[in-house]
Image (cartoon, rainbow, N blue to C red; front, side):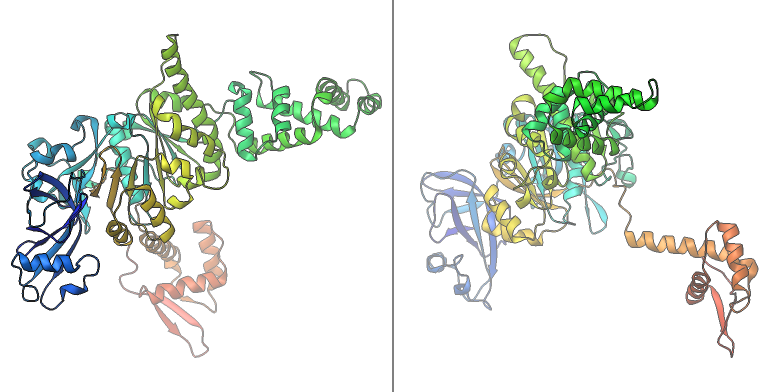
Length: 618
């Protein structure tokens, strides 16, 4: 292996007649003047006598051809392997052409591959094309995981890729980008399994109901049931209205629709600490009706028309009392706006439960997985993220001031479809707090893991704060442009993005100062949505056919001209479902088409169905 062509301090072109090059493998350039320089192959090509070298464009220029000839290569007669090698650290001077290269040993690049202590790191996968290095590494780094490829689990043959969690104090926040079917959700599952294995607390926003870790992945799987908590909004968790402060109530109401300054001022006037949802709602309703009546005198007039002690009298008395207290301090339109927002929150079922299961789970070092519709999670996230972030921030600030405070642990915030929660160009309920955490969270030990299919749609400020980016297969040109701007991927690597295999990923790490090409390890748990939808369809169809056959078996043979009405009555009695005549005809025809019944046609065109030996498969 020799350095050929023009060189620079950042990269060189190398050639060989005996050895082919692999993308992302490591090589050492032995420069006589500067010593040994470590680099990585970022582009590779092979030429033979059937393919002239002069068609290589920018990669193979006249200087490369000249130096190849000078070094004794028989251009046009033999196979020549060429590669571009990019240095990890810039050389002092351009490398000398003709310098030899060699493969590094594992010890030479240990620090490059293992940024921190193994016990303090998350095992995400295996570094591609490092089989030779893996044979030399320590025994404690071998047989750590499997990869899942071509429908089977394969044992580890490459160097493991670790993410140093202690380094996140300086290089916080993780972005996971990739199109549908690229392995993005799979990679996120692996990362969450590692957080649980290290007992790191985290809050997961799960709008797809897929982050359940109780189902082991076959014989190699692991049950993480004791390491996470599933909590559905409105069923297991919610907002305890009595605990709301005015600032938090304003944030929740704004999640339905942004509040004007007048509305915020009216909330501060009308809301009382420790009051219930019903109490606040009634106050708004009475005040709203008072504004509609127009004045104190008109309310009193209505009051005098009612019999004292009646329900209507009592209600008007409450309206008058509320109007006298708040009528001149509030604006009718603002009260109306607050009222319908409050009713919207109430209809969502967000009130009535507490966030105690979340706080308890985080204190115990568990993942707390919040499930609900995207809309519900957006609303709830605006409250819970602000609440938990302030708890952690208040604790750290109290330590700095040397004042007493209740401990609250550092934690991760993890979400899929992050562009829905913090989009570029318009506001959402959770965007503000996610943006604040992205900019300030490192100081307080709150870290983001944001996954999205569309990095272009994610808020620019947040994207810029993601120090580690895991980039799976990406096809859209606008998303690739965003990735190119936000990472150190080379032009050749970005060209490879649309063609990456499912589960292969480029991990661009500010902490490591480079991009690694990694195969995500096999997950130890399975998603509840693992079943192929077509398998589900065929299984359900088979089940329905079996049920239908069992129900009409005693009626066979069945003539469609005379027996359908009786068949419908039997089916409704046995299955408790309503059938039409056409539905029964269709089911009989499908059983016959599947070879489970014999079908005969009379000269009048009517059908007759009878048993066929064997019956349906149960």
